[in-house]
Image 1: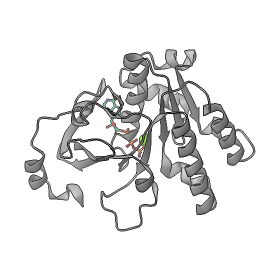
Image 2: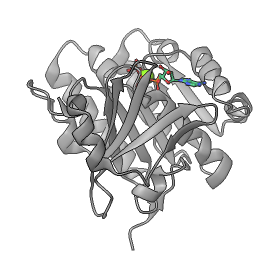
Image 3: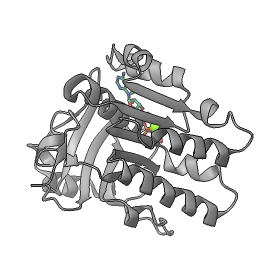
Length: 242
Ligand SMILES: Nc1ncnc2c1ncn2[C@@H]1O[C@H](COP(=O)(O)OP(=O)(O)OP(=O)(O)O)[C@@H](O)[C@H]1O
Ligand SMILES: [Mg+2]
């Protein structure tokens, strides 16, 4: 039996047939505003609240105060409490750039993660993480090192990445191949707002529902509607996969 980690997100664990594969790394892709950070926050928060699992949130975009505000706006009222008790550990840009160079902070971080008792990790975002390196080769070296440390310590990880199209023209890099799972968040504009969708494209070692499902973001976070017919939506909305 493959061990599973529940996201605690209504509808998502159902389409994942129980949750994401524990000790694996899942890539969470989508355009700006698609809900990647919301999903990531919810994953870490639910870990503590519902599964008694401690989480690390590496934020290369928002600082810890932004994260706190985002969490509280979503109704994750105990976020700050968990940060204070250490059940949630936030490393933001300021912390990560405290050392004279980024590699030095990264080494410190990797040391700290190694052997500590965390079960969940979020890296938000891989796109921004990449910008801290001058050279592609260095970025890859660190990414591989990172994935090694995560695997050695049994962390179950979500890495967000900004991606405009599901099938982009340009090379999408090696991240897709290094990760065990792939979840895409999609959005299409409507007259009154946006329609949001989620697609679990890949989950190694695991049978999942690979249709595209509608989702919502509101107070309480993301809710996935697993009972809608994905196929008819795709027909209605040709722009979805372009
Ligand atoms: N408390 C809330 N209530 C309702 N909707 C919210 C709430 N908080 C965020 N949202 C919605 O979620 C969207 C932002 O999602 P999020 O920040 O997760 O995007 P993202 O995919 O991380 O984008 P980026 O690539 O820019 O970081 C907002 O545009 C907003 O519509
Ligand atoms: Mg974000």
